Structure formats: structure tokens, C-alpha cells
Image 1 (spheres, rainbow, N blue to C red):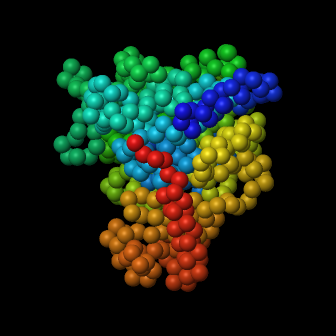
Image 2 (cartoon, rainbow, N blue to C red):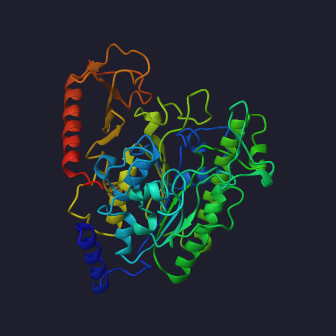
Image 3 (cartoon, rainbow, N blue to C red):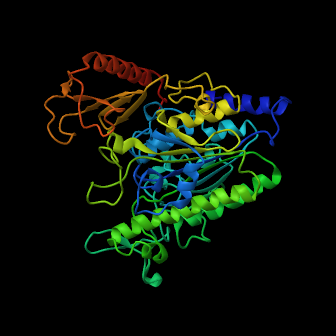
Length: 485
């Protein structure tokens, strides 16, 4: 029996035999929300004056709002893996989108919470493995991609409404019209001429879902989340609901109603802005449902994005705010994302510049439940519980990042960035060049969050220390990563 299965069996037996486990009424619920390719600057609570996000703005006013919240990677799949494992992508082997899958020996947050009596649900985009071994589906699903079969229902989720990868943000099962000018997509004008997009929604039985799939995709997802929340509340059972919206990932399409709200902008902008406002409405619906079911006070709700905005600055409508870089960059614009945690029973609203990352979710949730982290593997995330209680001022360990030859390490003040020559814009002759020919830069994020000034030549001792730390961490990943197929 594998280590993972021994741990799961031990947890199940312990849960059955231990009468001291707290009752469901005392255990908090967890509603963990993430959207796809939403930029730091795409929300009103970060100063966007165009895109209407009133429900997220209200949530921000009642949350602990992170000014420095990070996705664990510059693209989606690696970040998603960190979200559910508490580990860096270099440890579980999903380095970019459509790459690998969540391996059997990984322990997901859902599996760990099931040991504590939680009912678990996954809703939206999975992107941590294929969902079928029999029919062609999405990017890799089917017989040719069967080696990457790792659906959410095999990773601890009781209820699923899940896709392998992206879908259009309106009429998600149908291929939208592409404008001849290349400026985005349009809703399907003639449904009789529509063709399938090729990505399906699947349930926890591994069956294709065919009903209620028309219209705004964020609403389609929340139509499944709300009954899950209602049932758990009715039965007094604590729950983990992971909701991973597709919006505003391409192909981005908005309803006529939401497009009309931005009629003065280009078609691409109308669809992008409109689908974010549609997403915002569903965030409001989720929060209202918690209140309706009488479980809002003791439900911890999080919100973030999986990476920075898609496309070139000035061409694509997504905003990284004041930060340098975008999706696929390890500069701040590629990895610093909106981050909120709301828990009325425990967390006082406010703002913090404490650096946190998606890998922190799992250790935080387990710490809240007074459950120890499994001791058979290293975790890269830390618990934020002491931060909630005002007892943690600085992050005790830095946050590492890797993506396609790029490296970064961020602590409470400084950030080290190392890019292979030719992969960084401009020609910064002041950057320190490592023995491998990479350009290594140092930024003071407190004084220079836009990463405009490289301080490497002024703080060579800091560079050397952070490089050693990064090298030691990489060696640890090589020694403790998942074994592979």
C-alpha cells in the first residue's frame, strides 16, 4: 500500500475512533474561490474605475485584504496544484499548463478534510489532469491522454462539476465566433450553426453533464455550488467548496446585457469587462447564499487569481495595475494577484502587506482545524492563522518561483529575479550575470513595487544570500519531488 493510502486509511480510522473531534457546528466551512487570468488591477478595490465589481469591493471591505498576494506560478495549472497540495510545482511535477497531472502520492486538501468529516466539492476548471480515458475531451482527455487521468473525484472531492481546462465564458459548451479583425470573440448569433467547443463538464461519477449549460459560465458554475452549500447547511455538515471560475480566461465572451454596460469600449474590452462583472455578480450570489443559509459567520471565504493578465500590455484589456510584467512573467505583474480572506467569526477586516501565496491555503486550513501537516513530505506554504490573530508580522520563509527557466525569490522586502538572457525585455547592462549566463536582478519591493530599479550592484551580499537560499531550495525540490509516472 502506498504512503498516501496508509495516511488516508490512518486518518479515516482515527476520525471514526476519536470522540474528541469537534462537532460539525464548531468546525468552520471553507469556500475557496479562484478566477482565471484576472489581473491585479482588474477589480474596483484595487482602483479600477472602469470594470464594475461592486460585490468583490464589498467583500474586500469585509476581508483581510492582501496587497501582496501571490499565485505560486505565472500560469494556471502549477498554481492550482499549489492551492490543493500546499507544495510548490517543482515538488509535484506540474510545471506549466497541460503538463503532467496530480500524482497518486500527492495528498490534496480535499482528502485531508474528508478525514475530518468534511463534505467536499470542486466546481469549475480543474486543469490538474484529464477527466476521461474513453472519449476525446478538452486538451488531453481520451485514450491518448489516459496516462494523465487524475480527475478531482480521484483526489478527494465528493461532488464535482468540473472541466479539464478552459471553456468560453459565455455558452461554455459552444465555440464562439471569432472576429475577422482578431479583436476578441463574439457571442454565437445563430445557435443552429454552433459547433461544440470540445471541453465538457463532468460530475463525480465520471459522467458528462448536459443540462443547464447555456449563458454566462460563471452563473452556470454557481448554479451547482449553491445547492451544495444548501445541502451541507441543512445537514449541519462542514464543507470544503473549491470554486475555480474560468473567467476571464480566453475565449472571453460576455452576455449582451453585460457587453452593453461597456458599450463605449472595443468589442474585446466589452467582453472582457462584461465577463468580470458577470463573475462579480456570482461572487455576490455566493456570499448572499451563505447568509441565507445562516452559515456566513463561520465560513472562511477566499478569493484570488491563478496568475496575472493574459496578452501584451496595451493590446489586451487585462490590467496588472502598477506592476511590471503579465502572465508567464515572474515580475510582479505575472504573479501578484488580488487576494482576499473573509471570515466574520474570526478575521477583522483590514489591509496587510504581508506576503502570502496560494501554497499557504492548505497549511492554514489544517492549522485552523488543529490538524498537523503530514510529516512525510515537505510543504512550501505556511499557516496564516497567526497573521489573522495579529501575531505574525513578517513571513518566516521566502516565497520561491520558477517558470520555464526563470527564477525568483521574494522575502518581506527584497525580490531576486533571474531570467535567461534573451527572455527579458530591454538590455539591462547593470544586471549581475551568473555563471550560467542568466541575468540576475534585485528589487526592493517596498520602495519599488514596479521593479523599475535593479539594486543588485548595491546589495551584492543580499544577492548572494538569496541566491544561496534559492539554490538550496531547488536542491531540496530535486531530492523530495514526486516520483513521476
